[in-house]
Length: 272
Ligand code: LER
Ligand code: MN
Image (cartoon, rainbow, N blue to C red; front, side):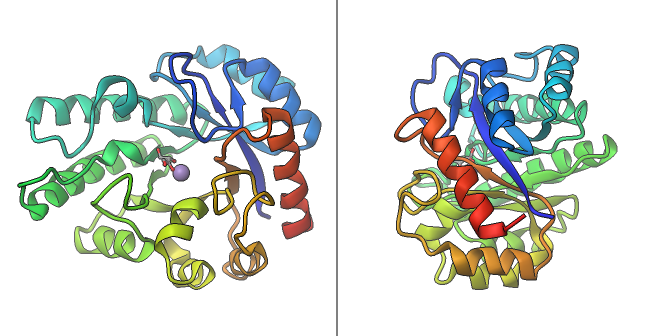
C-alpha cells in the first residue's frame, strides 16, 4: 500500500522552503495525525537536534511513522557537500550525513541526500566531482546497510545541481559505480522540470525508487498546480510502489490547508 507523509521543518533559522509544517514538532504531528497521515519526514539542523526517546514517544502517541530524515541542513547551515573541492569539507559532509543516517536508523528510517550532493564547480573536471559523489555515496550506503536502513539519493532540477537531474542519469550513475546500497528519490517537482514523461520514468526506474516527494508543478501541495497526477499515480500503483509519497511542498496557503489539500489529493489519487 502506498503511504502518506507530511514534512516538518525544525530549523528555526530557515524561514522559507518546501515543507508543510514548521518548528513545532508536537503540534505538527497532532495535526498530521488528525488528518490521517501515515508518517512524517523530518528536516532537522543535525543528528542530535531531537532526543530519540522523546521523538519515539511522540510517534507512538500520534500513531505516526518516521518515513525519512533529510540531510540538507548540512549544506544550508554549514556549507557542506560531498563534492566540495576541499577534502576536509567533504569529510565533514560525510560525517554529518553518517550521523544523520544513524539518527534515522534509531527509527528504522532512511536518510535522504539531496542538496548535500553539491555541484561541479566552474573550471573543474566533471568526472572528478562525480568520483567524489560516488565515493561518498558508496561509503554512506555501506554505513546505512550496516544499520539495516536504506539510503536515498535524490536527483534535483538543474537550478539546484549540475550533477544529476533525472532518474535515468541517477540510476545509470549508481549502476556504473556499483553503488548497490543506495536507491533513488523521485521528487515530482524536480521531475516536472527535468523529465520528458514523469510516469514513463517512474515505470522505467521502478527498481530504484525508494521514496517520492509529492508536490505539484509550482511546488505547492498536490492539487494547487498543473501537473497531471492521474498517470503518475497509475504508474506508482503499476510498479507496486509500497513506500511513502511525502509532501515536500510549500506551506501554501497555510500549513494546515497545505496538509489538508495534500491528504485530500492523496485519498483521491490512491483511493485507500
Ligand atoms: C531540494 O530541492 C529537495 O528536493 C530536497 O528534498 C533535497 O534536499
Ligand atoms: Mn525533494
